[in-house]
Length: 557
Image 1 (cartoon, rainbow, N blue to C red):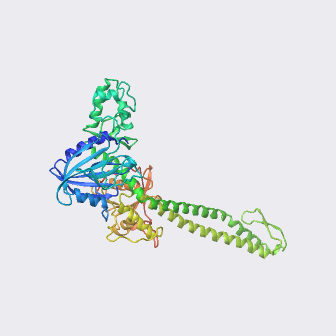
Image 2: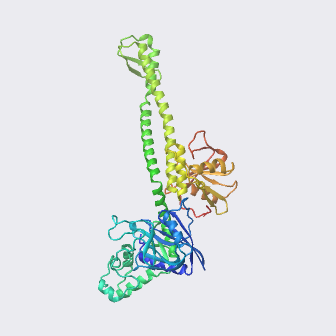
Image 3: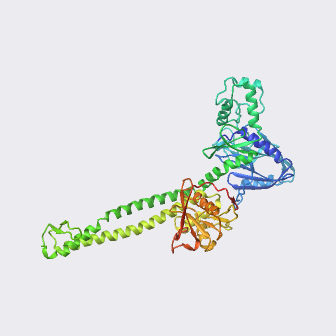
């Protein structure tokens, strides 16, 4: 991903224009490394997202709603103390790189006028957000503390003097001179890494994309023109490859492009899904590990049970031998080592080994005992296998729910479910815990409400409590997935197909093709006594086959 300084120069310009004359109305910290500043100004309210996430450090305007933690972190309280109510003075970018400073005019704790700098350093795992008092460049607080034993070049701790990151000694792509360029490199020899080697804030990825456009014209003119167009763009694009988002750029490079008129919107759409999944994956890592361990345990158990069933497959041979010996007991004598008897089922000769140290009656009992033992073992293994397969389906459904989680509340709901199911130890729920998350709510193209469960608890709620008996229930056939409810008795085939697509997309087969989706009236869906959350039986169903794709329906919740 070429999310480099030259792209951020467009966002800096967008922020400078969009926040002119604004003041900070609210400060929130929904994640440990995410800050959202809400500004009130002449053009209305704008939200600015700033994150020091090591994989997706960035700043841009945002429209997404995010849940706030129950307890405010220290950094958030410091920001609220100094920036809430402060006026936005401007924004600057250091040498065209991923180092951005936002300036504010506010009040200190004594009520005197004070200027502050919020420095946003977007440098991978070294990313940070630092609040600085401009008068003496002292650090007030930072989202990540960096002590001397972690960084010998500079210390980032409250009360220390702020020192910017070491300079790159490269040219600013938007404010260099031709003389500086000629000293820094040879413009006549433009290779794929020329721009990343000479200019700060230009990644190797962007350098390669620019190199593909070079047509051999006057190099100094081409270089200045392409950097100006890239760093001061008016249109922005998400690059796609095989239907997947691959990059976000500020110039119409070659390839499949999705156009935007806002650098922030393009960046948010590109990063949000991947960033959210990475965050939720990290927050649920312990649960995923536990589920993987239990899935392996259950699979091993199923293999053992299958082997037990295979070993019992010859039980009828033992029963037959017992029957033949019983029917011919009058012609057999104790002490025989074998008996050759007519198999009256198929007319062949049956050779039966006998223990000469046992009587004929004891040999008969031996074969009946072996038959009954294998029969009991088979029945026990079959019933245990059924329970193991139900547990496997349940664990797979939990894993799917974790993968589809979009926020901390949904992860907490799944954690609570696992505690109730006995997979995790119970722990005390904090006072004031937020209400459980709600199912997805979509509107079909004809205006029909469609609901999709995010986890097993929601699946049970939708199917057993929320839906009416004549509403329609959908679920992927023999594949873990979400329960889907069409909240209407009458609807078109288009609505049915849209709901079936949602059922397939929010299932383990979401990336497959020709996914079977069963549907029936809710009255035909039953939850057996003692069944795990989300587990139901159903009848009188029909099946659709769909190729799942992201829904284009309006999502209301």
